[in-house]
Image (cartoon, rainbow, N blue to C red; front, side):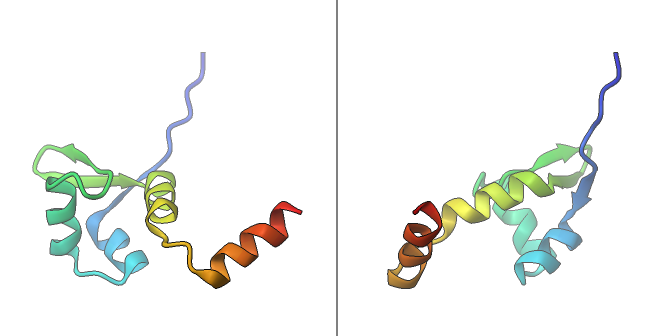
Length: 73
């Protein structure tokens, strides 16, 4: 049986994606505000988990709701 694992990214890469400082990303992971995995003394993240988390954080304003309505039609 062959398993395919999603590569993990570090706090620096997540910080670059989100426009945050790496220490902020680490603090958020420590506080369970962002999905992360502790590997020894380092935090690692799955891109897919970060993407899902980010989508769940988006506030549905008028423009975003219209886009969703159009794509669901």
